[in-house]
Image (cartoon, rainbow, N blue to C red):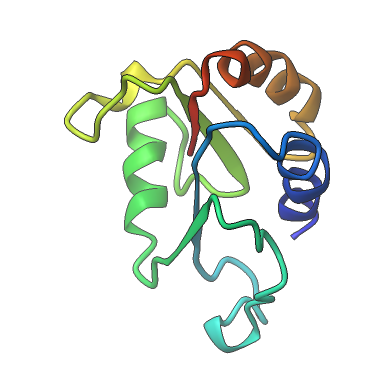
Length: 121
């Protein structure tokens, strides 16, 4: 959740006019990570779309595509505004994990995308 707070405070609030989209995908990874305990106040920006992935399907999908063992979680994947879901995941322009651990990398990778009005996923 610290990563979500960092994204809210340092990317969304600091760039209120940026034409971007954030797709936040949530699922259980630790005891207590239940949907009923999901903090709705995190990522409450209108540019954020939330999904609950009970089966961790997206986490498994991205792990395979990015060469990560197991399930990819607490991560970001960046796409430019021309990317479509039909594009392969390799069409991403940046990714990292954990969000907090890779925050400097995320800041570097997102800077040019914010200038062109890209999407953050």
